[in-house]
Length: 322
Image (cartoon, rainbow, N blue to C red):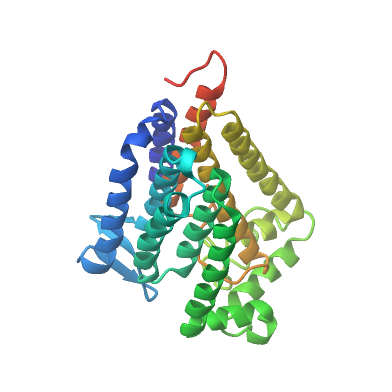
């Protein structure tokens, strides 16, 4: 409740802060993200849980720097792509600097280890460079290299291989690696068309792991059924559609790139979380925006909506952003 209240305040504040201000903050935010990620690994403030070091402890609060790193990367890419628009087709101008920045963030995130967040940053960078006009030859080649790098990191970690195998046949591994997917699918099956009713689901009672974060969509499927699931999906589609519309109507390239990056980040997070819950993607610990428990994610997602609202207001004739 506290984070929700803070998130609403942040949304209102972001709505009234001119989005062009982020152009001045691109490099400071990027430097801050690198320092925070390094602090997780190399300072006593880093918190380890479940074999991963992904959080910073600031008194009673926990903060996940990878969430902020995603936002900082989007702001940097929007600024850089606009600045280099006239020479974006050049390999050393439009491609290399962005990949170097991605690599610096990804290395620190992979050290945590958090393969999923690093993969999301890579996809976001690729999408924004594609929208910015970087040559398809460079983007296609990078896809091949990223695919090889992804295969390398998957095969190097036993738990990632087990996740992949359990994704291909979860019922064969229902007692260990496929346990989460099996119980998630059972939750959706139990829900049927109309659901068991709010609060009446039983998979969350010591059966389905992480029902309040990674698998909250499964709880929704069990308690609200297909009708509730479709309602949630339609609401998310509305947010994504509005974000794309704002990006197309933005006053300048920076606003357009920033809006498409923020919208893509939300869309990726939504698709991955839902895909995992439905057994369409390998298991990856990722929250569902606005629904999952998690203070850092909620506040930053609310800030995202506020920034999109500011870009949208600035792009409407007669309604400039404050």
